Amino acid sequence: MSENFVVSISRQYGCGGRELAGILAKKLGVKLYDRQIVHIAAAKLGINDLSEEELLEMEKEVKPLSMNFIPFHSFGTHMGESSRGMFMSESAAIKKLVADGSCVILGRCADYVLRDYPHHFALFVCADDAFREARGKTVYDGKSLKELDAENAKRARYYNYYTGRTWGDGRNYDLVVNTSKEPLEKIADAIVSYIKTVRA
Image (cartoon, rainbow, N blue to C red; front, side, top):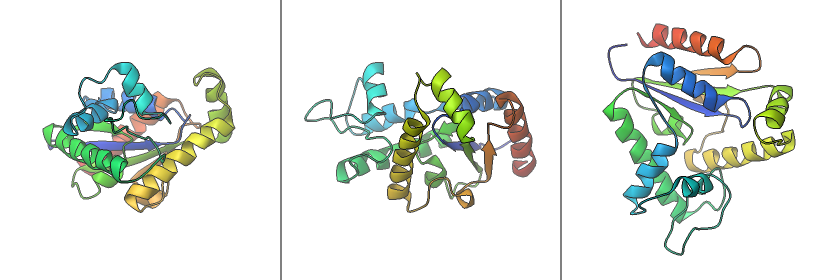
């Protein structure tokens, strides 16, 4: 793949999508973007010097950090004009990152933002409930399946609101993978092989 390309990854909470994104980026030899996009979008809106703690809080259901702060209400909370500004800024940041070189982008409705980009591969990652429930106990600080599903509902609302599409609908992606079937390394190898075949 000689030209710049981008892999966008959307995922269910608790399926190992973040880990898979890291493995894919390493195997493809490209950068992985997730929270960096929030930094860029925040800077575009004049929100500077975000700490790591503030950045993490922006990805949860939280109140504004200050009266002048436009928070990134992640995954479907308090959607409206202020959060639309952040969504538009994030979209612009995603397009800028893609123009700068090949990469993997996790979340942020990147599959929608880049829907017309010629060298874009959209991936949705999911897993069986039993697999996610087990990971909730061991990886996500004891979260129950109900809690994981609640987070998925927020992601779906956010995605549906800003894109007009249905989150997780296979028609929106080039490939849907179930991480509960095989080890992440093996899944990543298969995805890389597939991408190289169809994007060659």
